[in-house]
Image (tube, rainbow, N blue to C red; front, side, top):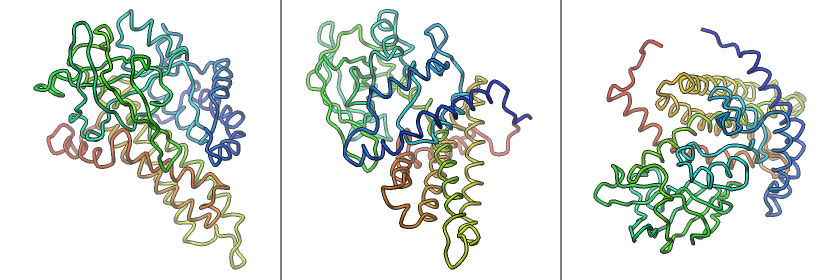
Amino acid sequence: MDFTLTDEQKMIQKTVRDFVNKELKPLEQEVLKNEREGRPGISREKVKELRDKAKEIGFWGINTPEEYGGANLGPIMSVLIAMELGRTFVPFNFGGSADNILYLCNEEQKQKYLIPTINGERRSCFALTEPGAGSDARSIQMQAVKDGDHWVLNGEKVFITNGNEADFAMVFAVTDKEKGANGGVTCFLVDREMGWESEPIHTMGEWGPATLIFDNVRVPEENILGELGQGFNLGMQWIGQGRYMIPAGAIGAAERLLQMAIDYSKTRITFGKPIAERQAIQWMIADSAVEIEAAKWIVFRAAWMAENGMDARHQSSMAKLNGAIMANQVVDRVLQIHGGMGYTKELPIERWYRELRLYRIFEGTDEIQRRTIARNILKGHVKVGELL
């Protein structure tokens, strides 16, 4: 068993960290100021500039197949990159990628949706969640009714990431009420110009999801993604990919936050001594370091399983559950160590506090992950103590 990164992995990790330190961290105060004044933290023009710089050093299409101009680095390397990007709250990710299920487009759809998305010419959003169907995705109610060579969509989607910015959506609708999620849900590629509208949802963090409204939106038959009735499986494929990537980003944030606490505790003097010498502070730092390390290896194992063609769903659920809880515990301790200053908007801690709270909700809540993990164990799909 070897936990050592390869020379290539070390090189990529260092290159991304250098990019974060040189290009992203210097923008943090500007991002905080913009967000305090109600503007986007970073403009789309600046994001494009940063992506162009990253592309020059080879960071384009991290998981995009080579045939589409990507690097196709695989799950383990993607996790390492997500950890490094998580060290800053500047909203940025490397370009040149598309949602995993878009690769199931037919040839005509690839030219219209997939390739322009990879090239940064189009923006997509994943529209599954509804007011009455969040964790219970099988309960979606949006209807798609056949009318000649079109389908007519009526309903509402909520908490859709990029929903305000996207020019097309991957929309999941019921095409057969009797079958429902078991062969009666279809995924449609729906251009904004076909008639759907979006409204922003204001949240406690900087995540800006949207409500999407469909009122007799006509979608041509040719815009079905995959097969008729097989959309629910596509939706689960989309969700499953993110369950070890989300905690990877949380690990990067937690490591940065912990270092902030370590640095502050060495300089903050109370009663004649740095608070780093107080046992209460030492234990918060120690607990945080242990929890981060544990989360890191759960995530790495999930990525390793995925990279080696194994079923990583159970491990990914454990990674998501553990990583999200860990990050929330760490940021809470770091804020406590900083005291009143940690609660102000002068430091980014309170921003991370709000942002990381979301990690316990989206892409499967804590409760859903526990349900999944317990079900797998109780039904014998996974055995406790089985050989590695």
